[in-house]
Amino acid sequence: MYLAIAIQLSIICIIQASAQQDSKSCGGCCTAPAGIPGIPGSHGAPGVPGPVGMKGDMGWKGDKGNAGSDGRDGPPGVQGPIGRPGVPGVKGERGEKGEQGLTNSQPRSAFSVGFSANPGRLTVGPMKYSNIITNVGSNYNQGTGKFVCAHPGTYVFQFTSGSASTGNIATRIMKNGQRILSAYESGSSYKSATNMVVLELAAYDEVWTQPLSTSYNYYYSNGNIYCSFSGFLLYSTS
Image 1 (cartoon, rainbow, N blue to C red):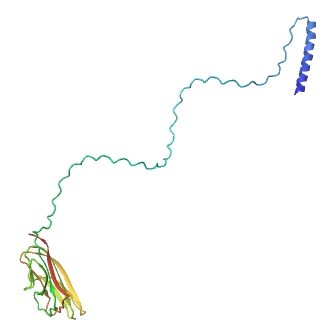
Image 2 (image 1 turned 30 degrees about the vertical axis):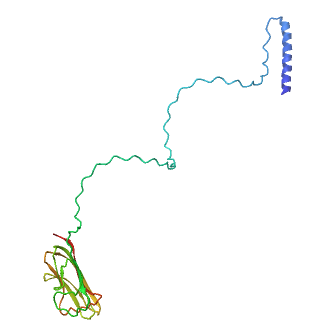
Image 3 (image 1 turned 135 degrees about the horizontal axis):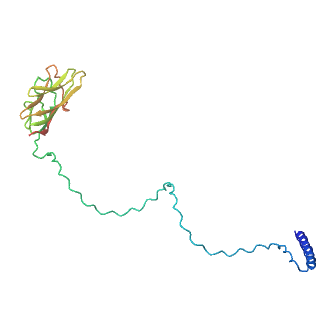
């Protein structure tokens, strides 16, 4: 590189010397030619930053972006204090009157009777139970074997008849001489028959039990009372 520059400088010197000879012969009638540009200098150091320019105009508002996904639930917050009591509500309408409960003035009638000894063969008619277990109101008549209604209303009656014979037993509940229902049992030597009924009774109605016939009355009982008859007032209609 330096060799090329030296050669160029030599050529320039030759040209300049020739030009000087020409100028002498010319006698100053013409000007000398322009010189050849010199070698470019090296780059200077970066300049100091200039002052901050003026603030530009605000740009146009961009389009709304898509909604992002829901973030995770945060931890439960601290429970706040209990609020003040609210204003009392409007008083409701009065309810319907309830049914009158049982009182000491409610009529009472209940009985349970049975055979505590073997009655043997019975005739067809009211069964006169020898043992009085309960007789509230004294409405069961042991002499006649009949329950006599003193308080009109709804009553429940139930009987059980036992036997230790191979003979049959059949017992009826009667009301004022009319058959209401029956229970029948036959077969093995130890057996029992039972039934229950709910009856509406008026004052002085009579209810009792009796065998179906002389052929169906092989009853048996002892201190265990295998034969019994019970009844009680469910509710009064008076």
